[in-house]
Amino acid sequence: MNNKHLWTKQVTSNSLLETYLDQSIYLKAWAKYDHEPPTGNESDHAEPSPNLRCQFREDAGMDTYDEDMMVFRYYGHPLYIDSIAKNILVDAGQLQKLFKTNNIENCNAIVAYQD
Image (cartoon, rainbow, N blue to C red; front, side):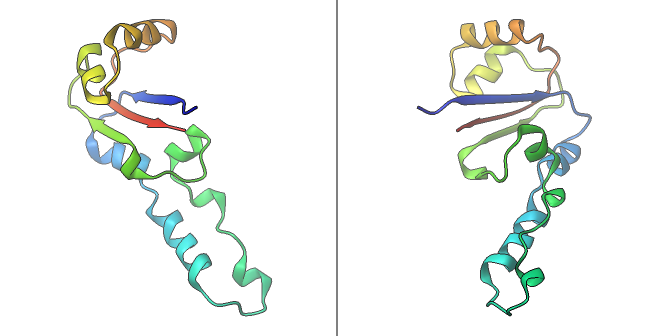
């Protein structure tokens, strides 16, 4: 069974959100690791450092993620539950309970994904 996850945050700009989510450096390091022929030198074939991961992946505890399977939204204003629910296709009442339980308020950026 897939679990749905919702990440929320208050950020000051879309560019800061993009930086927080940018995994290009890590993926570029993996591309070299995955596509270079063996050289016989183990250090040439070491997996990329986890320190290259974007901050979102670090905070969410993920090694990698598929952007095509996620919803990313930034808004220049705080979001209302109904707007978020509509964007991620979930029940607004259940989302309201989740926000209340986790003391979530004043977010203007969301990332929704499944396991």
